[in-house]
Image (cartoon, rainbow, N blue to C red; front, side, top):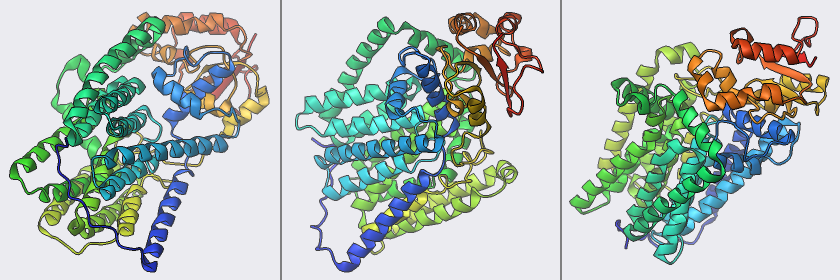
Amino acid sequence: MSTLEIDHAAPPRKARPAGLIAAGAAGVVVLVAVVLTALASLNGDVTYALGGLETAGLGGVSVWDVFVARPLAYRLLMNVLDFTNSHDMAFTHRLIRAETDLLVAAVGVLLFVGLRRHLDKRAAAGIAFATGLALVVAPPWHFLEPDWMAALAAVVAVGAGLAPRRDWLGGLLGGAGAVLVIAVKLATVPIALLALLAIAVLSRRRAGWATAATAVLAVVWYLTTKHFLPWEWIWLKDQADLVADSPIHHGLRWRDFQELWRGLGDATVLSPVIAVAPAAFAALIRRVPDVRMRWLGVAVAVVAAGLSVASAYGQAEFYMYHYAIVPVLAAAVWGAAFALCPGARLPLAGFTLMFAAVSFVALRFPAGWRRHNFALVENGYLLAAVLAAVVVWFVAARSVPWPAGIVALTVALLPPVLLGAPYAFSTYDYKISAARPSAGVYGEVSERIGRDTPVLYLAFGAINHAMGNPTTCRYPSPQWLQRGTWIESVRDYRSYADNLACLTNDQQARYLVVQTDWFKLDKAPPDVKELLDARFDCSATARLKNTGNLIVCPAR
């Protein structure tokens, strides 16, 4: 039985020519937005993982054994998406994006089927479409990150949990989806809880089954991977030890809450649909006649909002992609409000377009200005969001057609995906902008040494992706050796010792590739320097010339 009663909308009227034209125009806007997202390259964190999987795979390292600072579930998903081994970076990026868009569309259909069993058809369509659109037209620094994958898996969990006729089967499938949320990145446990909460809003019985299934399947997943892939958990522990600022190490700190709030402000400027979420929620609460149910709805919303940012807080680095679930949740609430609250459609659409216009302008200001004026801008968004919620609560306007809402939501998702838009408004990577994919000098270096020539990389994995040369080291981007150049305690990690073994075990490499602004050779421990010097000639006369920020040394 549902915990939330939904009024059924009036039967749809027969479509008129004007309505068909408006629907077609809205479809064109959506299509243009999807095409625009494909122009920018995949972000550096994603190409880091792709580069490691690609180059180690070419060297004979299994996806089960390679280290790219990402869990096995994420590696498997990325390995499926990246199957061409093409040296054309633009083609690879656009193919992966197209495949992912199709996957999101399928997940959106699953969500619609699940919601349709418990909600009115229009409400189910509004939520599913808005959610899918937010996943496809996602900020470049969100798209295909593990946190974004977790958001996608959460949608799978909700759809699969609600779709089957039998509660126990829905619970089992929903629980499997929730475990997938955790498996792509352990820090995204709060997102799994958010998915279970969403199921509970519509069916307490299914939520109970799903919660039980999640607990059982999580234990099975842990024991299985612990037994067959023990290095997964060694890596996880060592990764957690690297993040010294995590609350795991120091507990609750006021500074972390301040950084969390600032990061959320940045995420709101990037994805202005977040700023309209309070107004959409106000519209949904206003239509509930029972005062007690209203307060229950407020409590659920507060918990959901907390869970949506809990992962970012737990990781304590406050990168924009740690907030990847927030615009997806905001879009889902927006879609529900637009479908269920006709009187709120006009102000919702109007405020959505207003926030989008401000974001288009704000993101084009110089990086220095954004850095120094973030408080003014983000506080302005907060005040405007409160005002929008008040207006929606007290003002009932004439309804507007669905195409208007589709256009407004699509426009609100566009500001961060346009070429030249920054990855963040004022926080980490605020100077990096979305750009077209290009291998640049790295592709040229690969051509000079031979595309199939094996190398040993001391570089960030995105360099691997751009070059594409094979490596037999299962640490294709040697994170542990790199961290060991300035964090002495890392040299005691088991992961470091395993990574160090590549310097003696990898006898096939014909070149050493060092990214000078990532791996500082002069700061490496003496044993690392000795092993490298014994294998490669990095003298000024032997190095390749005109290699940008790379040092490319031939084997002795």
